[in-house]
Length: 439
Image (tube, rainbow, N blue to C red; front, side, top):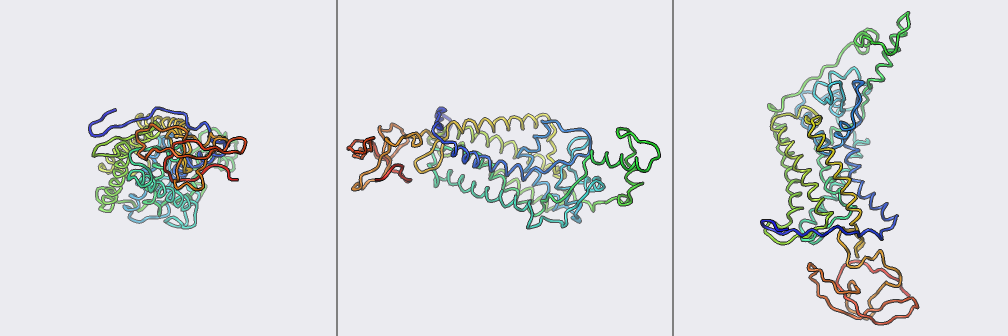
C-alpha cells in the first residue's frame, strides 16, 4: 500500500520451511528462544509471599512482561542513587518483589517492614563479581551487543539490503535482546543472595512455637497472635530494622539526570523501531515479508507503550516502587495478554516462512531455489574453466528487486548415471558456499 512518503510492499505468507530438517529446527528454536529466556529469567526474581492469598495467572504473567522487567532495573538504580545510607537490608528488599494482601509492593518502606521475615541478607551492598546474577548480566549483555550490531547493520544496509527486510525465526527476539542492555544500569546493585520467609512457612513456624509453649493443644488452623509469637518468643526479632531512608525523586539531582538519560535511551530504541517500519524517510519502496512486517509492528507497539509509561511516571516522580505502578490495572493486564499472544503468533508465522539461503543463513524471504529440498540429481556446479562464480537456477527470475545481470551460461548437471551434459541455466552472482558432490 502507498503511504505519504514511501511505499511498503508486503509479500503474502508462504510456506518456505517445508524442507528444514529436525536438527535444524532444534538449532533454530534454541537461537530464537535464547534472548527471551535470558531476558525473562534474569529480570524476574522469585516472588516473596507475605500473605496466604495466591496469585492469579493474569497477575503472575505481568511480572514477566519486558516492560515490568526494565522498569525494575530503572527503579533499583534510581533508588540506589537516592539512598542516604545504602544497607544490606535496602539491597535485599530492593531486589525482592513482594506479594501482599494488598497486591504487589516494592516500595521503599518494605526494607523495614519485611526485615523480620528475611532469613538471609546479601554479604555485601553490591553485586559480587563471581555470582549467578553477574553471570546473567554478562550473558544478557553479550546477546544484546550481538543483536544491536545486526540490527544496525540491517538498517544501514551493511548486513542486508536496506529495502528488503526479512528476519528468520532465529532472529525475531533480537530486538528484545537489545533492550536487555538496559540491565547494565542496575548491574552493580542486582542480587539473588537473599531469602524471605514465605507466609506458609511463617504460619507453620508460629504454630510449632505456640504448641511447644502451651499446655493445651493448639489448632494449626486457628488464629495466632503473630506479634506475640514473633517478639515474645524469639529474642532475635525484638529489635526491628529501620532504613536510613531515601531522598525524594524531586529533590535528587542525580535521580533527575538518571531518569533523563534512561528516557533518552528508551526513545532512541523507539526510533530504531520506527526505522524498521520506515527504512527510508526520504522516500522509496520497502519490501517486507509477513514475518518482518509483523515483527516491526510488534516492537513498535511495545516500545511505544513502554516509553510512554516510563515518561509519564518518571516525570511524576513515581520511581519509589521497584514494581511498575500500573501493573495491577486492567488495561496493563490486557496489554500483557495481548503482548504474549502476539509473541506466540509471531513465532508460528516466522516458523512457516523461514527458509535457508544460499549463504547458510535463515530468512523469511521465499528462496529462488530451495536448496534444502534438492536431491542429489539436482545439484549443479560451474565448469572448472568458468570465470563466473554465482548461483544457477533452472528458470529466469522475474523478481523486480533483483538488480544483477541475468545471463545464461553453460553449466554441468550431474544426472543419475554419473554422466554430464551441458545445459542452460540462469546464473546470479552471490557470496556463499557450493552445495553438491565432487568426483
